[in-house]
Image (cartoon, rainbow, N blue to C red; front, side, top):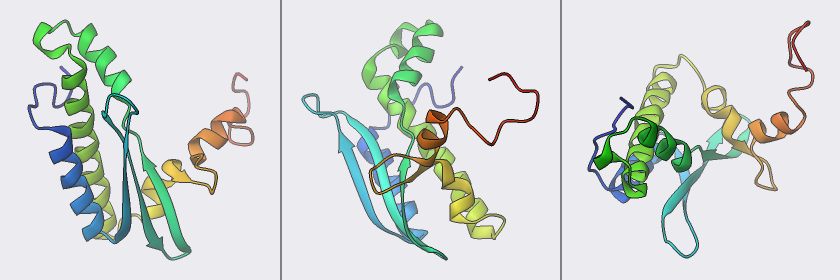
Length: 145
């Protein structure tokens, strides 16, 4: 079963926990994004000062992906969009906590763990930019292209 598949914790509570942890780690700005019309909490981004200056990061809350997995697991009580939202945010909270623990110990830097989610001035993440170029310059020799 998917991690946190049975959580009943409201997404707003989970996001406030994430926000508090990010603030403790030095984030000075946190933005919540809601789906127009439905009001569903669908995104969270933050700004933090690094050794290179202030950077913005967008966290990957992919509720659609979680909903698909819950439906595949065929647990009727767990198939709702609301449950997928709760589970997605809980998984993200656990991941953020683990990343922040690595940063706190000095094992890694903020940039190392959150780099794929770093946003440019136009809002595109580094991952999205590299993916749009089909990972040019990063693929190992002999890889399929």
